[in-house]
Image 1 (cartoon, rainbow, N blue to C red):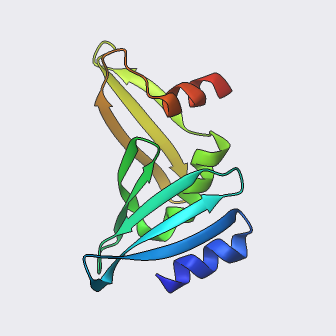
Image 2: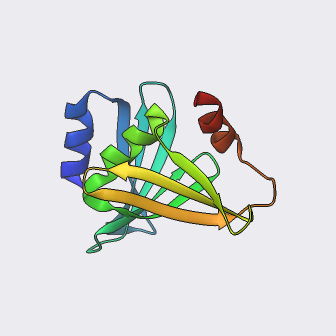
Length: 124
């Protein structure tokens, strides 16, 4: 956790960061990252796991490689996320390119793009 905060500070891409203890357990902490653009990310890092959950606005990104959290956030900030549709337009597939491969997730699509998704589409 300390390494993540130090790396965020060294990167110069974040205006601030802090850890918040969860449920009184010093091993269970959430990390709040504020980017230079003012966006806020909540990173949930379960102890002894190599994946994290990243929350941004009302979007939840599960199973993000813990050692690539800062890269993941950086890609989101730059809008370099790729969307596609599958299953005859019923599934929205999200791809985030990372140095070691692409993080992929999908969700059911009912014509209901979130504000964040709309913003990414508009950047294209």
